[in-house]
Structures are given as structure tokens and as C-alpha cells.
Image: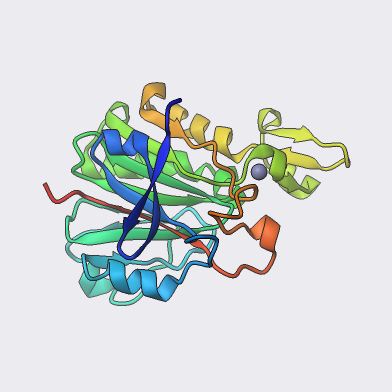
Length: 241
Ligand SMILES: [Zn+2]
């Protein structure tokens, strides 16, 4: 059986790595629960930041992607409001928080620049993934056909019930009615299709089938827990080499 992900003990916490990205030599991960215990975020950040400067945005469910360049430290000494980060610096680690929303890992296949995107239903409805690819390719002069992307663990269609006010913001192919008369939303395919529409090749896109709501031993889930006790930390960085 093909193993699509693996657990690594990194930075003092449990980290899920996607083998698809490992095959491209891309340094990334998702900090998850350790033995079912909540993620100690402060501790995780403290340990991770010994390695590199951590960039931690304040997420607003928008479509802003911030370039972390040489001027970043000067103009953003604290936190930046954004749901996406991109960089070609090899001295920073990009991070975002997710619970049921999708973490989208993006990189040029030569590993010279990387991006991390947080896509919930709002960002997905506004085609954030496609806009992020466009911004990334524009900033770094990369052809979308040379991009690699992975959509990490998030909520699956069967677990993601939404009301009509959300469902109506999506094309019919991504919503289906459930037995209770509400709708189920397919965030994964909506985002995958946006990456394709932005010019990416199907073989360069991986979509994780791990559902954050089903796997309580590994993930926090807003839909399962309601008031969250913690969130996962997705991270990505330009490799040292
Ligand atoms: Zn599920």
C-alpha cells in the first residue's frame, strides 16, 4: 500500500509530512496533536523559531497574500494580516493556522520560492487559490506549469455541512444536498480546480484525503469541537541547499 504521509518528530512536536512534497525535496509540515493531546502552540513556535524566523500572519479569511522579502522585517515587525504568505528567503519559516480549512502548500519545482495559503469556504468562494498562484508566479517569474502544490488535511465533503447562504456561493458541481435538506461542500475539488484553472498541471497537484473532522486523534476540527482548543500549524520554507 502506498503511504501518502508520514509522521516525523520535528522541532519538538509531532509533524505530519506529505510524501508528495518530500519527493520534491520540499521542507514543509503540519504540526498535529501528539498522542491525542492538544497542540501546545507557544511551545511549538518557540522550538521552531530556534531554527528560523517564524512568520505568523493574522488570518482574516480574506484573499491577501503577503510577500516576505528583504524589506519584510522592517515594515512588518509584528504581525501581518493575510491568509497567504510567499517567500524566496531561506532564513524564514512561513506558517498558517488551520482546523477544518485547507492548508495549501505551493512551491516552484526548483524549490527557490514557496508559499502557504489558508483556504476556508470564504477564500475558496473568492478563488483565493487561483489568485495566489497568479500572484506567486508574477512575483517570482515562475510558469504555473512548473509549480508543485499539495492540499493538506482538511474537512471532507461528507463532513462539511453548510447552509444555503454558503452553498449558493459555489458552482453546483461542488455542492450536493444531504438527507437533512442542507448542503455538503467540496472544498478540496473546488481548490484543486482553481489550481488547474490557474495553469497548473494535474500531475503536480496532490490532494490529501485525510479529514480533520474524522481523525480526532491527529487533528483539531472546528466542526467537531466547536470552540477550538487548538489549531494545527502548517509550515513551509525554502530549503537550505
Ligand atoms: Zn470526515
